[in-house]
Image 1 (spheres, protein in one colour):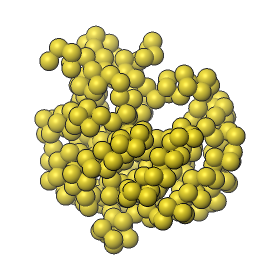
Image 2 (image 1 turned 45 degrees about the vertical axis):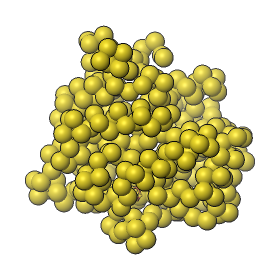
Image 3 (image 1 turned 180 degrees about the vertical axis):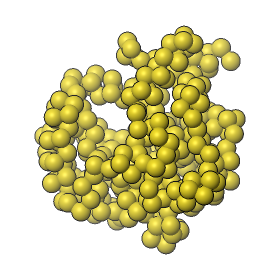
Image 4 (image 1 turned 90 degrees about the horizontal axis):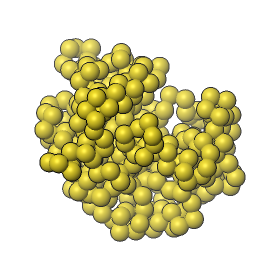
Length: 306
Ligand code: SF4
């Protein structure tokens, strides 16, 4: 663990593995999503927008190589990054025939600055031929598969219009793990109707599933999402900053120490509607560090004493 962090950070893993600053380059490869095109549903998840959860800076519409070049330039300037992971982030990046997926995944790997791939998707977009392709890539590059879990509770999954249940996620993770693929799950804290107990159950489920990494997100509202309508009509309660800080500290104390923490909160960027406090991410991350220090606790510490 890093000296100044009480949890196992993805940045440390990258620095240790590659010996330099490595940044993710978010890409939009032009995929769609079965929860938007009518195959599973229409309208998408309530927190998503027509950009398919792409990061704000993603140059939608540009060729992958152009997106890579532009983002690398920016990340070199901002973070002094030396190497990069190509992050297929927008929409469902395994939702295409395996031959097409292979062609697309191979593109960034031709670039010597790219040291690995991150592929984001839904649990119902992982048929065996796609997993075989990912397993083959895993053998020759540094690969992470990110899958949206969001919660383990089927009633919440239905409320947020995910279009799959938790059993689907459990099955997908098991099949990935059987093939040795590194899996990072996305979890949202503060979903409508969920109690603290519900959220903690989802956190403990991460441990039970034996995943390699997790991305935590606070529920936030992005312009153009279904949630925005709820928020504007006063039908949505969002967490206060202090509430989220304490909750994340509680959550980290329950996560197995070997699980890598890829993220502790989301980025709304310029499309963020609320909560306002999430615009100052560094402040929130520092408060989480302070909270853990105040408690003298760390990732997994409650698993040891409970
Ligand atoms: S599965 Fe992903 S891309 Fe599709 S609607 Fe949900 S969040 Fe958006």
